[in-house]
Length: 440
Image (cartoon, rainbow, N blue to C red):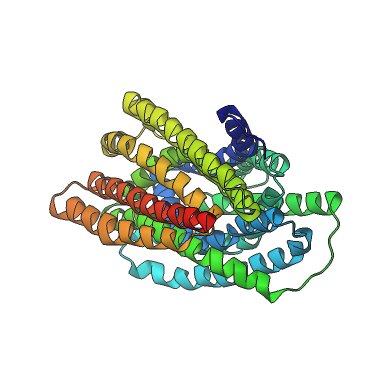
């Protein structure tokens, strides 16, 4: 096997990661478009969708985590020279079953909202947003499934171009439905939900058409595929769920104090998510390349893709942390002109700067774990870091020591550091076992 230099591995990872970065940023910009339009409509609208999306995300991410197992599993199959186009229909069936379950769960959560202690004036808007969004799950999961399927073939350009286009489509639809246009009245929060509904279905159907135009598929049934998806995906899904519930519980806890704190949490999360999408895309590329190398038994490539991927991810997040430290007021000002939100959000930005670096490291390590199918540790690490440390520490600092949102983010920083330590230990053990097998 030919030896490759550092530049080769950087190029290989970025060839996959660059379009994913573009698409991931587009996906987040769709959400940010909602935030900006909501903030311009009213603080109550901003607070209502912040609480609603926090609850919805806690439900949706379980399915998204399971669907995320498609590309690393199929990449391993591809490395083993198995035909993978036959898994097209099984992948769609898998995602649609998950969509039905998650839709029902969101609808079931709606009657509980009045009893969760939120400001009464926000409750109707939260419920309306959740009701419409529940039925958009099918479009969202179809898009996620087909994006993962194509990613296993290293086809990443078109899916992410669709996402970029939808940034502008979403903004246009938000403005039309939220503020009204011509015969369409101002619908406020309901308008935001309708726009998201239409955009999600457009994204899913666009990828479906692309697949049928460029590939031929036959119907195929294999129970082993579903078992493999659950085997790899369940730990990933539960890990993502554990993490998202931890993050979104902050908005829910603080939303019970005042809607403006939920809005502040949504604001700072929007900022961190933008920067996180770059290392997250690199992590996806790591999972694909490491997965292929693992399936093909190319240990040297596996090690080098892992090292270069970690370097790229952490390097970017270090630069991002410097930007956050240097321009906190400017960054918050991109979303709001509300003085109260400024006073809450700006101090939190400094804490987030520290969080950024460790978050970049942990997501790169998670990509390696997915590629080598060591996903159980990702679940265990997330549970220990977020629920045994982050949430308890954050809650005590927020309410006992009156640090409010700053307290929760100190807890999240602790979680990111612990995550890194656990996954480094596990990957070192995996590497040691691999070397022993080679020697035998």
